[in-house]
Length: 432
Image 1 (cartoon, rainbow, N blue to C red):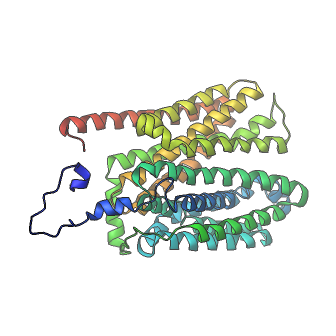
Image 2: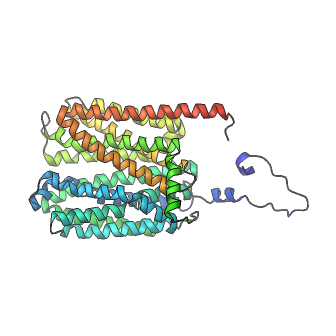
Image 3: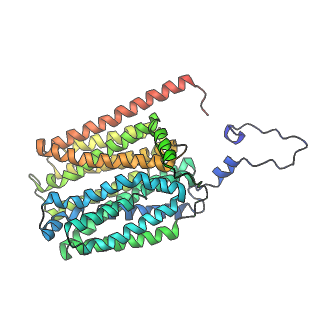
C-alpha cells in the first residue's frame, strides 16, 4: 500500500532529486471528478439525461397498451409483449454490450447505444403490425442495454469513491424521471391523438436528451481498454459470481425490483376497482409518485455517509415494507402514501446496491454492473408476473404479501452480510 494510502511518510535518499516521484494512484485519485469540481455538474447532468432517455424509451408503450390492442385488434396479453420485448432485450444484451465497453470505452458504447435506440424509437410509430412493433421494441431494448452497466462503470472510474453513491444516485434519479414522464406524457398525448403520436413525441424528447448527453459528457480520463476474448470475459464473470458480496448485491437488486415491478403492474387494477373506481387517466397519473424516487435516489449518498451501506439497505427495506402495509387500507390517501414509501424505499435501495457493485468490483466493472442489471430486470419480470398472480389469487393483499416476502429476503441477506463482515473483521482486525 502506498504512503498516500497509509499516511506514512516517505524517506527520500539525499542523493535523489529534491522532488519525489508522484504516487500514480494518488494522482489518479486527485484527478477524478468530485462534487463542486470542474466537469462534475456536466457529467452528472449528461448521465441524468441518459437515464431519462433510457427509461422513457424502455417503457414508452406501457401506459398505451389498451390503445395498441385496439389499433391492431389483439388481446392485452399480446400487446404486453411490446413492453416485455424491450426489457427482455435489455436483459439479454446488457452483458455483451458491457464487454464492448471494456474494449472500446464507456462513452463510445453509451453514445452508440443511445443513438441506435432513439433511431429505432422514431421508427416505432410507423410499425405496420404488432409483430413489427414487438421486433422494433426488442431491438430498442437491446440497444439500451449499453447504457446502465457502462454508465455505472464510467462513474466508478471517473468519480472519486466518496462521491460515487451520489453520482450513481443522480443517474438512477434520471431513470425515475424518464420512467414517469414516458408513461404520463404518453398517456395524455395518446388520449388526444393516439398512441403513435405519443410514442413519436417520446422519441423526439429522447433524441434531444441523446444529443445533450453526447455534448456534455466529459472525455474519460481513467479508462483502460480490456480484452474482448470470450475466455477473459468468462473468467471475469466467474470472478464476480464467486464474490459473496457481489452475489448478495445482485440478489438484493432483484428482490427490490420484484417488489416495485409487482406493485406497479397491478396498482391500476387496485385504483380502478372498488372502492376507489378511479378513471384510467387519473389512475395512470399515479406515476407522478416516481418524483419521490428521484429525490430518494439522489440523496442515497448522504444516507450511506450517515448510516453505512448496510444501514441504508435496512432503512430502504423498512420504508418499502411500511409502504406495503399502509397501502392495504381502503383509503385513497393511505394507498398513495403507501406508494410514496414503497417508491422511496425502492429507489434508495437500488441506488445503494448498484453503486456498491461498482465500488466492490476491482476489475471488469462493466461486467459487474451488467450482472447486476441482468438480475435487476429478471427481478422486474418475476415480480410483475408473481404480483399479478398474487393479485388474482388474493387481491391487493396477495400482492402485498409477495412484496413483504421479497423485502424479508433483502433484510435476511443484509443480515448475512453484516455477520460476514464481523467474521472478516475478527480474522483481520486492522482496517485500512
